[in-house]
Length: 199
Image (cartoon, rainbow, N blue to C red; front, side):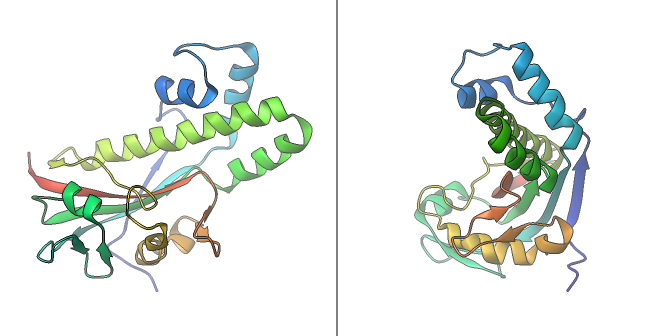
């Protein structure tokens, strides 16, 4: 089934700047630290990365305490409920860096543990940076609260399934879930971002 209200956002590797703080955190280094090996891993990653996001703008009902009703899913979560306080709409999104990143990581895991560690950190930081890029686009005309993802706080990771199904993510993004509700491609993110009102 095609969900025609789903918005697709793509970006090239030059459009998304990998956040230095996020990368430093994942590499366990100081911000701004680099090396020829890091730069080579980054160049290789950017040659295969394919940023893509699917999102919808949907009503959210908060009439029942600690329950967030999006119509297609009802989420019991005091943390999300508090996060969405004052919101009557929300963006629901999923995004990925693409399956080629998984293949690159699998290859590096065999040939070089050092390069695998660096590239894994780079690709995780890239996914977060793309999420920030998408949020920047979505908040051009509206005020939003910080994004909130399944698996964080008391928001169960199991809600990734109805979220991804609503976005038709298997077809639109190539994202699938395993029995533990973990996504493939692995460098993928799902998130909910409440809308406070127009700018």
